[in-house]
Amino acid sequence: MKKSVFLITLILLVTNCKSQEVIYSDDLPNESDLAIIGIELGKDMNLITFVDDFKNDSISVANDDKLIFKGEISTDPTLGASKGFKFSRKTKYLKIKINNYKEIKIENDNNYRFIYINKEKNKCIIKYAKKPIKFL
Image (cartoon, rainbow, N blue to C red):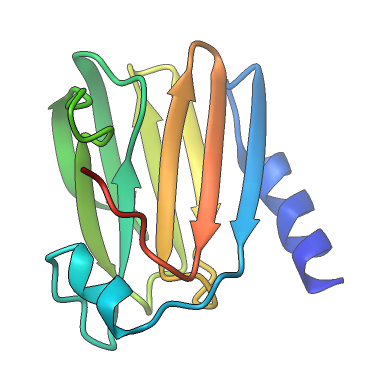
């Protein structure tokens, strides 16, 4: 029930994406999973990562209305990822703009420490995960 309410809230808050998909991955991480990302998160931080299909895209990322990044990103074809940002677990929401016309407001769910954003033309895919993805 909690996931349904959260998902409905997320759908209502997303604007300017013609369609979207939200995915939850409940696989639990082990110590080696956390070591593969090469970023020390500690207990107070979560991570948002932009993945596939970004090519010289202008993005801005804010947590609770405080801008943490504004610039261009491109997906590294050898890794399948472009850029990641740590943010406080106390953050209530993240606001993301892609190319100044797609704005996504994502409520922070501390049950999922990793958020992945994928852009497919006019579709935004948001994946919440407990376990990090290994990019090679």
